[in-house]
Length: 246
Image (cartoon, rainbow, N blue to C red; front, side):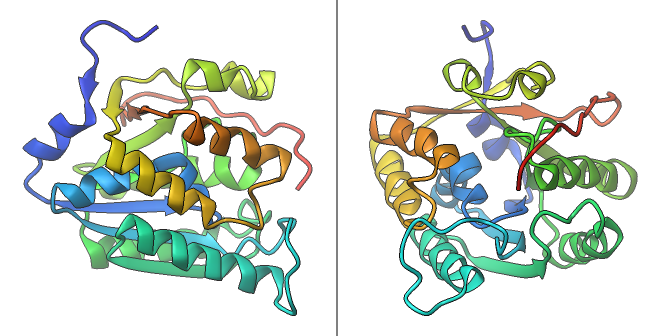
């Protein structure tokens, strides 16, 4: 159940003077599955939206025939199609090693700082400290972005997408126990849900894997809200790297 009186994400959007949203995730499809509704809502409210993806997802499996393309090429094309549907203004796609962001943190964190300075966002969105699935790239990107914002850009708002209670039961128990509670809710209109579904369907190479099927089914069956946690920079959020097969 939701906490009584939970604020809506729209309240923050309406009050914010700097109407720029920066979305930072490790892999193609993270932006749609984790924050697609937020991106669409921000665009509806005339925000400029920049999406920064740190890898091309080269370590992922393909569930379609690549037709001569590499995994990176397939996932890049899917990403470009998805962000077009979401209305993203600028896509920044890096090529750090999928599955190795923990080892390459010093390199990609410099890129994140550069992008924040160039784009000057009012709101930043990335994974929460649990990483949802326990993927090490998700966890390290979450904690490093939080660290960078709290030390260098503390006036910015940092939001973490939060999995709803029904979805959490599908997650690794070690991960589930440290997931933050939502303190913001985003209602998705029917047109937003349709676009979100179409963007998700852009990822044909990923849609039939076990890890991706559940979120897409939830969209098809009526995903009506997204949940977020507004990060408190003064708070310590514990993270845990769990066993994860990349």
